[in-house]
Image 1 (cartoon, one colour):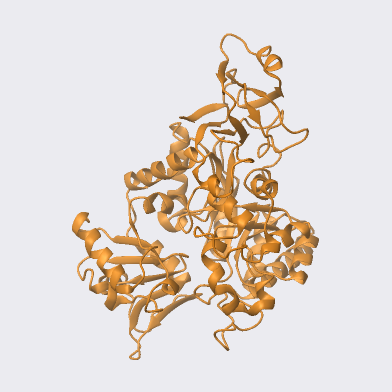
Image 2: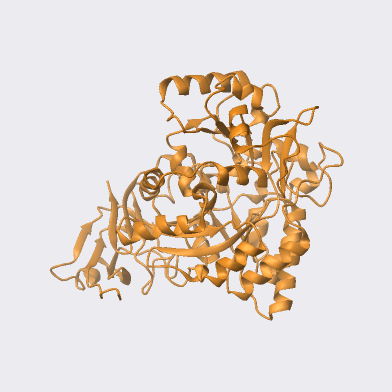
Length: 541
């Protein structure tokens, strides 16, 4: 059934509007049917209103395009809001104590799992990964799944290993199952093995998924996020389950922002079936099927990011590749033939090189070209950036990563490679389109955390003093652009949102303070007064 023509209208007047587009500031804005028709003075906009127009006097508040979060894990972010946070644990003993306390205060169902996230061995006294024996001290009866802050490494207790039937000799392609000297799994899994565990944990109920969805989306609209791309397949377990969740939420008019799904499919066969069933073309007004997500490597913190040269603090180790070059080439070519963008997960310069090789091969084989993107894109180089620009490959960065990673980068990479890491100014100066996201729950959903990090390149303790590699600091316009026009651009949506211009979606956010005037640290405390998506008020203070 075709959607009926909308005649609802909304006008915001007496405001300061930063449209993030030419000709710049305005005073008022008018939209009809979810589409912006005009920006101008209060007088000009009021002249367009009729008796049914919702007119809001903004009392001088500051309006911008709604934020786009280019990459997160929406359901995992929702779950994280009510599960154990281990980010402040400074020892394994403290982690064990927090786990015991949480179990004492929170009931776990008979067949339920105990989830926690956020530990980082680099911040803990022991400087090692927690293992099954550590987690068994929390519980030997309830299965435990404790994820590292990056989400690429996890620790399982003995009960979890038994339920999943992970024993001696167990293997996962592209994954690592750590073992003790006897060859028995010690509970530490990484890369593709973590994804396998997520997808083999008993399915969560529809009610549980909806609950996590509600928690995350409510938080997002309060932060002014109006569009998001999310990877939820590992949480849901089945492609159809993802469609069932989001399409039902849209049908029930319970989708307060625009959501696109990134598909982390397991292999070529799964991708072929996905495309043949037309799943890459599915979508409505608020939910749509998004890009193919391909994990190419791991993380710097775990020394699994794939590098062209060995780690400076781990001779002989160049990281882990999730796919051979041949496998990657075939996946990209199949996606490109179907008109499907690829969002490569790549952190190391070796992984980025492999991504560019695959794009180059697909372009030659298909005779076509799609603007693919590299998510994270952390360890770069002048030659890689030149190739990215030439191939039209975009960068999807997570600025908040620098606040947690800066203390380890030089030791992992040495000074020369470090200066090409998290090199956002260099990406922009190379002519590469850049957008930004949170990767929540790895980092907070709040876009201002990333914006502050992009400008200052400091952690929340204002360290290092002048910012890490300060030549790569962005100015405020560049930082905000990554979350507005830049984010929409790399998601392939700039033609209809990301800036406030006539003909584009009425997706906007109003702040109580001027985001271009407050100090960088004050950005974290800016309050959202109003969030509008598709011309409809989704949040109002």
